[in-house]
Length: 472
Image (cartoon, rainbow, N blue to C red):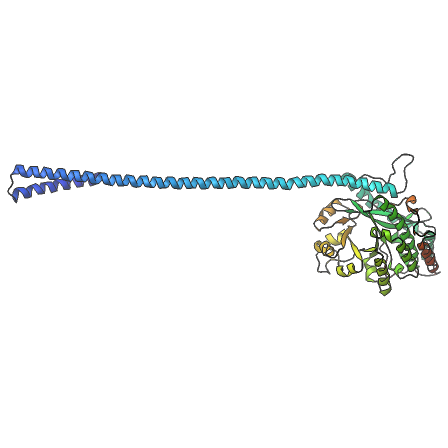
């Protein structure tokens, strides 16, 4: 295309030069030689002019290309700079992500190490308390069988063994009262109370997830004449029907005070839950019980008096007055055996309740939680806003503990951590003078007063009381 244009321009220049020569020859009368020279001169000038114009155009085109190339170079430089900035930002993001991953992994590793250390500490702590409170089963310098190690594999084995033991105990409970009618069973219970054959078993309440022993719960067990051990759930209905519960509570509370006195000598951070029946709050011997607790108010921060949820709901004016008298002396209260989550934390706090015990199945399976607006996962936070701690009991597996951590549960209790273990006999001996005044403890007078009102009526039928004491 460029070559055709050049040929066209050359032909045009020749035609112009020839036309100029012809005009000079024909019009102005120049000779043919003169006209030819003029035509050649015109052709040369036209050729020179065309050459200059073409070079200027080529120069302008080259300049444009150079300018375009310069702009392209600038654009490429900016793109390279932008790519470098993005690459630097990406490297920084990768470094930040790695730092965050390391920062997240390091506390987790530290927590796992701390958890291992605390599990070992739990084993040592329970073993130490068990050596103080559990019965001697060894001989000479041998370690008592009650002192146990709680490594994770053994915990699972202990939980399985505890379940098997619970089934066997059910057979023992039946065997203990085999062949006896209600009156005979009541007589057995009355004799056991009079002979102090009501033993206390302790089950630890541990912090979660550290599993450090923070409290114990005292559980009553009756030692039958044939040596069988009967749980409170099996003999308490007979005691309630025959008005033996106040006397049983006096005996249990006396022993709980003795245990707390010994526990606080070793560790002032350890507390004890002691179950009490509302029948005792309305009993004629309650003033003696109150006098005894008033004399031992120094241990009030370490002794938590526990009532069942049904008992708290059944309390009347007399029971509320007795409860207020205990609260005035610094004692705190707990609710256990929850059947549902319908509680008023503000009212409970005002009445001196600082703990609520709920079974793990009530929270995790939402059994009994459908009738309340509070979600089980928010239950601990709701109680905490009113100064009440949630204790989840009946924990029997590690998976349950993992699920409860999402519920912000601070305390746990159950066979996974330890089954109830008997209190050693020498741990029930008074530490100095129980009253601080000399002479017999006021609660002994209360027990005697209750004995007068707890006589077993002949021919009486066993009927369940309106509310139990929450014993397990």
